[in-house]
Amino acid sequence: IGSSGSRMIGSSGSRMIGHSGSRMIDPGGSRMIGPNGSRMFGPSGSRMIGPSGSRMIDPSGCRMIGHSGSRMIGHSGSRMIGHSGCRMIGHSGCRMIGPSGSRMIDLGGSRMIGPNGSRMFGPSGSRMIGPSGCRIIGHSGSRMAGHSGSRMVDHSGSRMIGPSGCIMIGPSGSRMIGHSGSRMSGTRIILVIVIFVMTGT
Image (cartoon, rainbow, N blue to C red; front, side):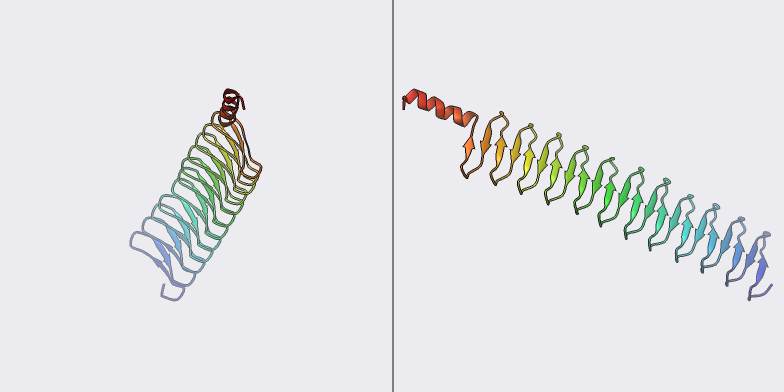
């Protein structure tokens, strides 16, 4: 049957219908419908629908939907949604949500949430929260919080609070309070007391 709304049966018994809303079945038995809201089945029985709100399943059986608010399912059954408010689940089952208020879980299983009030977990399971009033937990489980009235705990478990009226506890358990009306205790205070006793002054 001819070109306009045509129906054709190919050499190996396959059925093909023309370009406008066309339906085609190729020699391998796969079914394809044309570009406009089209439905296509690929060589391995995969299903593909065109670029506008499109749904596509590639030859390895994964499902993909186009770029605008898109949903894509990758080769290992992973699910991905496009760049605007996007949600992506990566190759190892990791989950990632896009740049604005984004949530990302990396390949090592660590969890990261983006820069705006962000929450991030590093490769060793450490937790980090962004620059403004930030809280960071380091590789050895240490905790650090940001610059304004900040609280920081270093790698050896000592505690430090920031520059303004700051209180710092050193690695040996010594305590130090900052420059304005400052107070220091621990080894430095002990040395002052020893000198005071020895001199008798």
